[in-house]
Image (cartoon, rainbow, N blue to C red; front, side):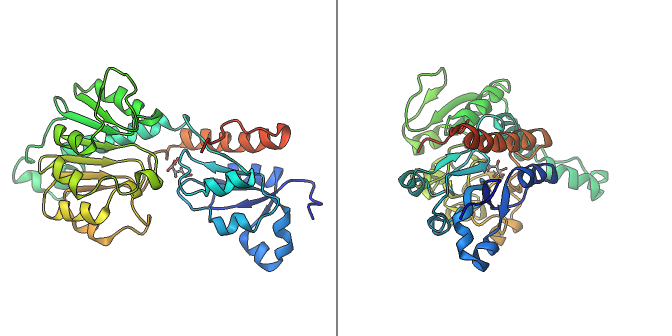
Amino acid sequence: MTGLHRPGLLQIGGFPPEVQSQIDAEFERLGAADIERDPARAGDIRAIVTRSNLEVPASLVERLPKLEIIATNGVGYDLIPLELAARRGIVVSNTPDVLNAAVAELCIGALLSLLRQLPQADRYVRDGRWLEANFPLSTSLAGKHVGIIGLGRIGKEIARRLELFGVALAYHGRSDQGLDWRFEADLAALARDVDILIVAAPGGRETARMIDARVLDALGPRGWLVNVARGSLVDEEALLAALEQKRIAGAALDVFDGEPDIDKRFLGLENVLLLPHIGSATQETRAAMAQLMLDNLRSWFRSGRALTPVTA
Ligand code: 8YV
């Protein structure tokens, strides 16, 4: 079946031309349509490349008897059937670390835009309203209490940057990491204690809907939520209600349920900053991610080892 000189590869999602040309030069790229047309070709697929915000269906993996590696372009692997991959001995690789700074920068930028109302201020000038009156006062980041949910590699990068803004930091996660920042095992207690909650934890079953009405009400009407992780961590119905009823002050969201087709109710709200999942979306970062994704594939087919395998 696999009389191919180059390993057969199934691609999910698109990549920039400079990445696509490398994939096509080194692999025999097949699409889902090729397998539909000729099911026998499923036996040619030894690798899947994907993007971390796209799903790799278990049903697809089950149709690929020779699949050896799933390489994702991103740090998240919550949309990959890890347990099935482990049962089948299929290695999963991601692109950790190379995007930490970009996501942390985006988080800080979103938080400052939210607190200092930067999009509204820009629109205020463009609409000529500055001629009539000064823009209303906003609120400072300095002096705020910030809670980070998920103090992993990205969470720590966010914390290190935030320290320079003169905030008090605390975090919630699976365990106390014994750091200078305060650990709070109870998420609702953390939400009660802080002015700002930042969501930086991985997506998946363990964290699904962990930001619910109880946490949002604990954060309260003077509290702000920033999500740069996954939409799945937030109960969006509860968030929409809290925003509509002003039971929280506002939110900055870079990720959503069902993205990019987000709930239209967000569009009418003035106390939410809406971003199109751009945490890692810089030229430098995406180039580094694609390089690491490709290097994982190359390493696997040359040595039988991935450079950055995901451990379930
Ligand atoms: C994008 C991300 O999904 O790395 C992740 O997990 O969510 C983002 O970086 C990624 O850029 C998709 O290729």
